[in-house]
Image (cartoon, rainbow, N blue to C red):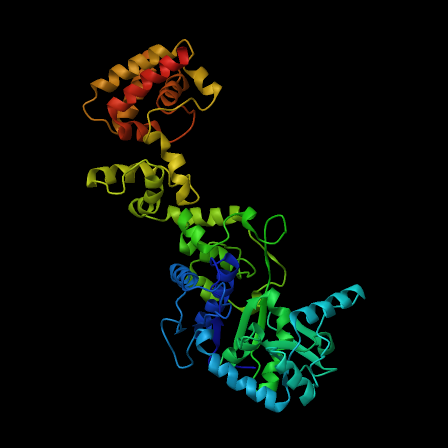
Length: 489
């Protein structure tokens, strides 16, 4: 089937943090809309009154905006098919419920929770799949009157036709067939008058003229129920595409032990939105070439449902870090510093408000970390040596460097020459170190390594020509003397 205007939607329930799985579903819908010049609708499914909150809704919207996923229609921006929150659409659902009951496609069910649970346990004990036994399907007027007199509040159930094959031509999984006899009459309106997910979603998608429903694989089992409702109400059935689960590297379902699970956590850790979008797009979708660093414009250009895989996608945090590091390296030193500064403040390294001089110094310090961090929250550990003069030797091997018999003389000569410098910059420090090597007639390692260990405690790290100018003469000398005394104590 061809579509004049593709309309897709993302319809989250605002019941908690916006998770990576939801972000991936939103992204695939958004990419399809962008690729085809279609419409991306944001609808809020807030019928879970106990758990839904406006706070969660705002979290979802903020995350989508941060990721760059703008919506053409829906909450906040409006449109021709609102309202876009389900709890504001109850009158609409009620109208279609009356239609289904009048057609004989739905009926009132007066079964109590206790009766339903007893029925369920009996089926399980008999080794059968639990499903509703249709006991209220054909109630007499007398039975209905008796139930009402008892004060029972009915639900509304959909009358599932017997012996029907429900076919889903899934855009990702191919043709999937369900037998209606295995479904059982299901509730479409709860006893408090609130529609169930499977019911409200059909009416919303139909009235909002959604052409493609792209969602998580776990919803595939809901699809036959929804198709039956589409058909009963005479609505056109949209194209469905069910994208794979996201698994951890150990092939179990994605959870907190595999890393952060909410978009907000990744934002707070200092990941870049363009990196997260790049990474999420590769969770279940394959670009045409081998290149995996793809700007969003290129992802949009290449995206198609035909290249979305059936197999589960594996959330590899190492790959995410690799992608994010690529985008971090492309930042200017100032932009990188702005991303890292909140983490330095949280670590107690700097004040929230910096003078221009201090900010310029911090920018230079953080520039040394750009090649070493995968996300901004790692920056404090990498640049810690610039913010505290109190440190221990990283290893016993490092300490042993300063216990070498030549180390004191090397450091004494280095300190003497450092104090005599008129300008302390990379070039002057490099010349100074070469002169110490020449005068002591020692190899470069016998000079460079004691200096490095004495001022950092480590045998590896940024170039000394970067470190010393940033520390300055006074701090460098203070560290040198303290480390030498500590090593020889």
